[in-house]
Length: 80
Image (cartoon, rainbow, N blue to C red; front, side):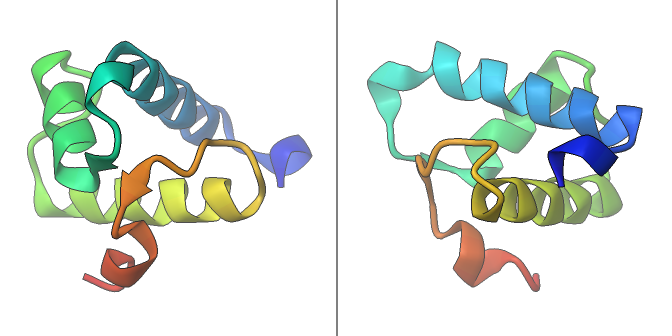
């Protein structure tokens, strides 16, 4: 997966990873916490489609070992 990532997907993973690292004192995080941090940083738009994309991207990145398993409920919420 990591070799075939689009630039926009890699940028989203990098931005989410930065949020996760910045909030290490508050682990585990929810997807919603990461999402609103990215919205407040203007990294993504506050839209349902952006939320669903973030969920999908982080789920796949976690499975591929590209992000840490610190997001609670990520797999259970993937289809939302």
